Image: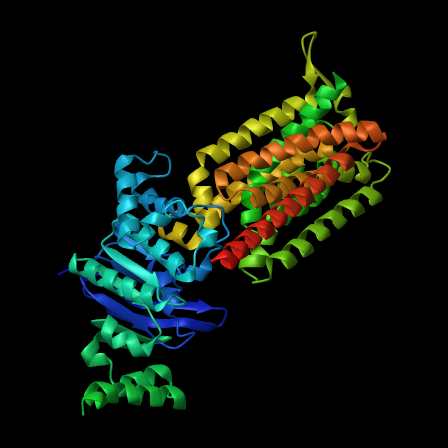
Length: 257
Length: 292
């Protein structure tokens, strides 16, 4: 099977300090893959380097064993929700329509086929009734759903998502994870930057643990261990105890005793 | 007829700048126009010194070159030196404008240029500079220059509309689609440079800035649809030109000053209206709540 994403010696340096250092991995296809690590560990930078938004100083990455430019229409990127100005004068539908630009090119009018895809995408994130709503009137969770709908409208094979669970309500978080699982079942690969250790084990089958360097990469049950998490999160007291309690919960379900 | 030519001149400037202004304010770059309109001065003076004439074309080239130079410097400070956008704008255009002033004062014997005129323009003189085809009078020269500029800008924005919108709203997503974000930034800035450079001769730098930011800002308050925002901004700019002209006529005052003032009043009125609307909406919601 062709790997979904592979990176080789990927290094990005801001000023003098490296943001990601010498990252080497090969990720499987058809899985929900988490990129985990503490704040400032280079998670977003890694995603941006893979997407060519930031030029790496050293190294390169490939998607489906090809150059990014050759597979762009098969790749979708969901930036952090806070990275855009939601006061931009546009409707929900306008934003989701941007997902069609990649395949339509920049000049062709959107036809009924595109409109159908846009509607279906909004349906999947449960936002169809908001289609004409101004984006400035959306809650954080709704904004995230709009971004996901735009990504779905791209009809890609791999989705790279930067912190899709930040600042969303519990209902939206559940809806998003269900959506990701159904996309995975349809054969898509999902690469998700995430920072909440509590939910990580439930959400991801495969993980990349990052702290500027690559700490570990592999199936969740192999890499989500106390030793690796301690190494990733640097062993501050609070995170350490959190990790310990997390692992304990899994091993000895206290409630059932 | 003079009324008509002056209003048409102002309206042509208003339309070009309104289109560009909508993109600029959504990119939080409205003051780029300010920077360009001041930074053109050294380009104009150097062009004048090199060609020893006040012919429009070399001056336009000089102005456009220094206009693009300042956008490049601002971009460089902002992206590479990581200086804040407003600080980058402030430091670069004041420097270039100052260089222009020094050039004028050093070569004051040779330079027949008036920096007052650069800043405030003189729209009232536009009809005096006439164009002819053979013997046929075809209107003021400025109207033809500004008309061509408008056509060029409107076409470029129309052709690049989707890319300009996507790179304005979500540059990372645009980059992920394979769009060259920096190219479209300069594409827009080239338009702003062109509009500013050809406009300031007739209407002055201050009115150009007012036209770039005012109508777009007012339109932003009125609508939440980007295409409509552009059309509203154009309508506001043209109406400000008409009302401003007659206000100036009535007051026997500066035309550019009156138009800029009307642009400010339009914003104030629309702002007051939207605030009232908001309050009455809130009151309505509270009333309904009290009833239930």
